[in-house]
Length: 150
Image 1: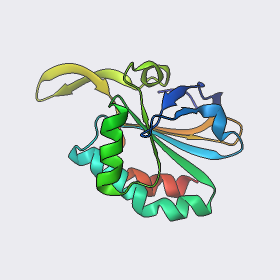
Image 2: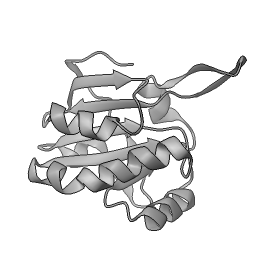
Image 3: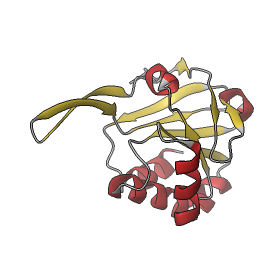
């Protein structure tokens, strides 16, 4: 996980529609940048749907929400449409941003070790500085937690 009070690494990633999004596009806005393992899995779906449910409250506070996983843009599009997600999903199939934000880690599940995305959420201020960082977040509770943080 990256330390707070440091600049968030710049990125350029395609969204669910294939449009390239850069961190710098959001200068002047607060951003919740959340990394999740995989579209259409139970935890990731709960997290995304809870962000969607609270989305109007984030908008009132001028906060943009960006979800990032290594899924393809096509997978993101289906995920977004299936659950009516009103925010941007970014595709990092090469894991460059996932690694830049230090969320690609060794994980253990049922005694088996593998590498994957550790569910992590960053709050980035209007100047591109990481002001909050949470690792190993609980999927269902993270959106409410982030709303309280902003």
